[in-house]
Length: 222
Image (tube, rainbow, N blue to C red; front, side, top):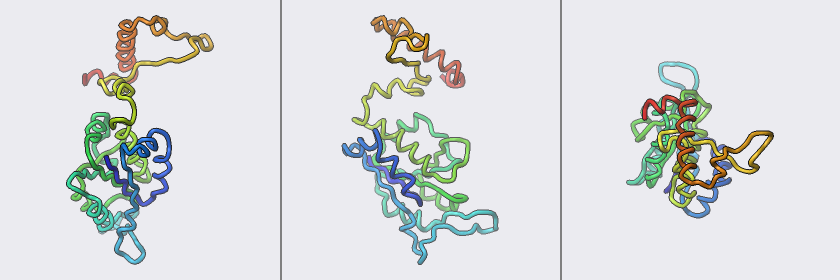
């Protein structure tokens, strides 16, 4: 897979790509991630990418030309172009699984007061990571990048994410490690029993209880 992140602030994005599992996936050629400054595609002498909105109003809007020129330069027949926006569809684990099957993603990070509306004619999808507004789309783009890359073959063991929260329509079950007793808090006996069937049933029950307690809306959907 190839992911191109279009941003005005590459230095906000690059450090995250140089750590942990994401860095290892890139180094192992399991994914290619490019950070593109779409200011480089501005045709104005001062490389301006924003301007005042027609009709008045506060703030500045991102212009069509540099973003669409960048899309045109990067796009192939396998590309899916996604714009990060609080007005988009909420990002869910199901969408991460869907996007992990794509060959090429172009993620557009906004800034300032938003985009010239005509830019949306050149994208395939609009995605939000929540009902709130950030200063830019860099963090949402990294959220997508992280959640998608970890699902790619070879990045992590499949068993590591198959039981993740939301994968089975439930939250994850509680997990424990050494020591078996910490400040009077004991690991449940069933997890120390070695009885795999009982452990599986315990974890299933705990996932249901955890979901009922924290996100009962998921059980209603299920």
